[in-house]
Length: 229
Image 1 (tube, rainbow, N blue to C red):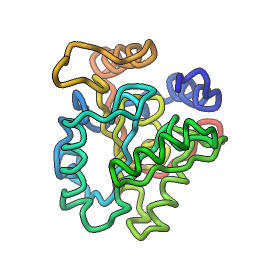
Image 2: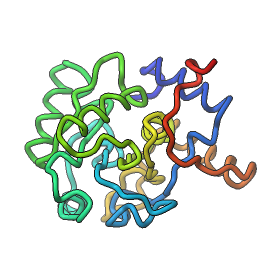
Image 3: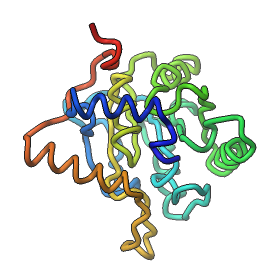
Image 4: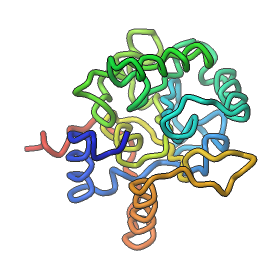
């Protein structure tokens, strides 16, 4: 889903870009999901205990606007499921997408059911007014209700977008891993599936880190800029 079609998310990300841009920086950057280190916790600052992981779909698990899985990514999902961090609870891995499960539209529900059947993983059914990056409380509620964790600092969010995936982790008070290159076909690694906004985010990240020396803040429970006094 293009960012501009999600107006509340656009407003929130712009507010952070102007007033607290470091919130859009990830705690760990990898090329694609295939490079995700397992276990995840030791690869993050302060080496936290991680009990739950949120995975984006579009341009992270599969090409944008499809639910077609490549075998290499299926193999990676199995490794994630078998990891010591996530193998103790079947609900410790959650797919959160702004397409699959994001509304009651038939195509979004069909994608969610297809992913759940093929991967054996739950897909969050998002409230239409709380799509990423606004769905942090719903993510935490899911993990709490299923006995995974009630501590957002034990959750890591993995995805290709700073303005949705990294920002929802910041809003939630969790850790973030950014798939900078998005989804890549291992047989055709040079093909770039990123859209305009994703490419602009990469330039923004370089500017913040290299030009301004910013770093990602450690997870903490916060309120959005619009809620601050």
